[in-house]
Length: 172
Image (cartoon, rainbow, N blue to C red):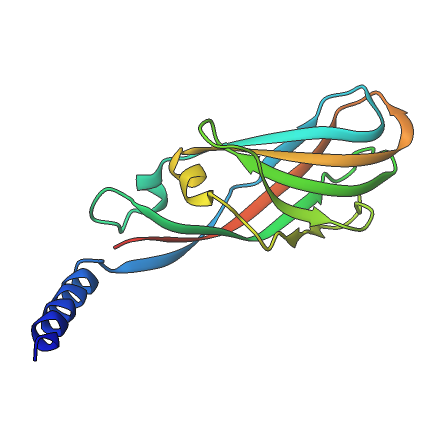
């Protein structure tokens, strides 16, 4: 008989917790075309290119009535596009990472083949994506591309367009 009051209290507590969790909505957010640039001179081996995206959460999620609260965030696609009529050296694999001013670097994608300088490159997405909610909340993301260059040297800047798509879950 003594377990009935404990069971009733636990049931009421679980109903209360579930009712206070609030509703969420998943949004697909795509960056504008960002200039992913490595400043020359560049040499054989790994070379770093960066692109920065500044945004306002209220502008990205205008239908969220309260202060925007990021519940979860995942990268769903990464595209690296060559600039038409640009001169490129022979390039190899590429790794893309991201960070914000208040978070550590997180690997988000990999191109395991040679970078195609004539077509759009779709990168494989990392299975594990840690702390992207906090990164997205900072309203500034720095994307870092480590590009393997096969040529011995290249004196110009290396530039690609970068578009990253996210699936973001927010409060309603």
